[in-house]
Image (cartoon, rainbow, N blue to C red; front, top):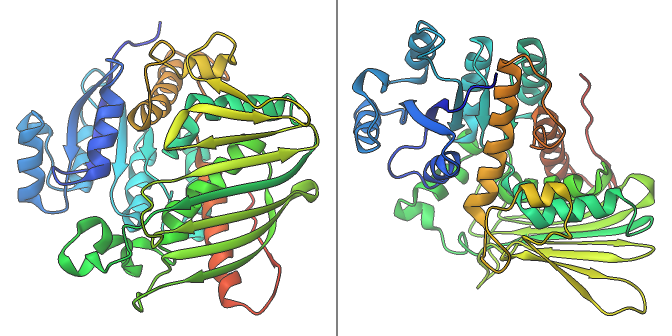
Length: 388
């Protein structure tokens, strides 16, 4: 019999963390999870203050993630956390995730999965050896109409694919806000904490993941032009030509310096028999176009959608669902998989519909290939591969 509520722990995500608050809201949305423990900051005083504000018991509020692992595994099966969410800056993802997985505790981790591709390759091996559930919160895969788009591509409704155009413009780094104490900007523009890329690592990786999720295709080679304004050490704008499998061509544009843009992620997929278009800022609609036919708009929450899209909806048609709900869908599927495995059952295909360690390693391979391509004089740069 599957356990009902799961006990959640969190590493990072203190009271001034944007993404930590998003993860908590998403995890708690369906009433199936309780937050019971945390090491919410690398600063012990801040960790304790954050835990108190969230109502965590003092004995389950830890001054470090190392202490959290050590103490949680000592608790009985009916007390210890069932999984942990890792919402720290990128450079800490690997050691924290490794420690919890090797302690037998499933992990839901914010993206990108690790600091480097080498860490990603090692983490894939660790996940497989631990046999624990690992989920990566590429949250845009959680939107109902993205799942509908994937279903339509998989069923051949667009015919043979020809072209993928995906873009994600923002403007939040147009000014050097990191110098004014902006926490998110400070660590994302720091190579020691963010990795070898800022823009492509942060939002360009969402573009790659979204395109792969919908089409199932791998990028074979790319031609990248990454740049940075104000002499920052990491890129904040990227333009990439891509060659996918089966001769499919593509364009990826990711930018944090596009004036007036907020979070304008959008994707268009073109095939021989039709095309589709989805906008993150208007996420409840999926535009479908076919030659010599009127444009169709598929809308979230309707009975004509595929099973995965319907499972991902909580409200009737016409009531908007969006960002937090998409995160919540990843949490629901990942924790349903955790429950199934704990009960000795095989999770369903709908339950295992969440980004995993392979998606994470693919993302790091893309990031590093894009950075190296931009630095190279080689026109078409092969995308790095990894083996299990």
